Length: 161
Image 1 (cartoon, rainbow, N blue to C red):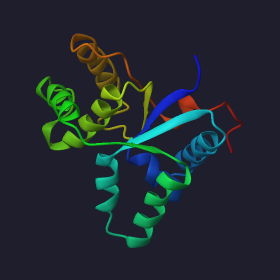
Image 2 (cartoon, rainbow, N blue to C red):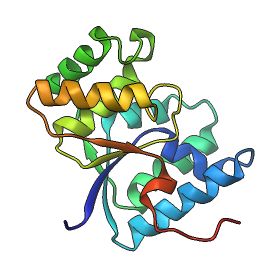
Image 3 (cartoon, helix red, strand yellow):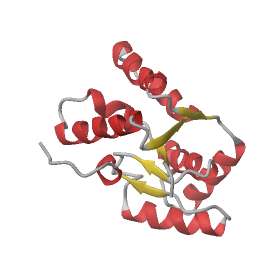
Image 4 (cartoon, rainbow, N blue to C red):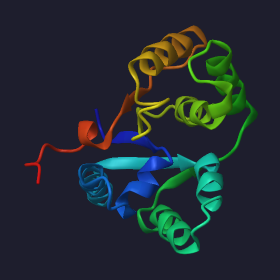
């Protein structure tokens, strides 16, 4: 199969620095270790960068944005094709219009032909309805399936702390 091509959604850049969710922090740090080790080819998008830039805490913003360079994460540019596919997700009610950026993340990974979206956004992304309905829409629109998983689901199995 080769190296898995993964899309890192915005939450992946936040959890390495949180202290109130130790399990997710450990899982996310493990993911970044495996990215560094070459297990994954990682991508994010200009949309994620825009969200990171909106972070009010300047130090946290700097830390999160530095992960992109430190881990050699490729950045997918903004495109009309991505926005159009995200519009389809929203029009079908997969993701509420108010959370359009969440639809954008899945669409960016889909349009780029990636294998998987990695996220800890359980409200709109890592969710049974979203996984099945985006799969249906992607097939209908002529795109390949994009899996949606948490970091723990894509990293090597390790003993939990």
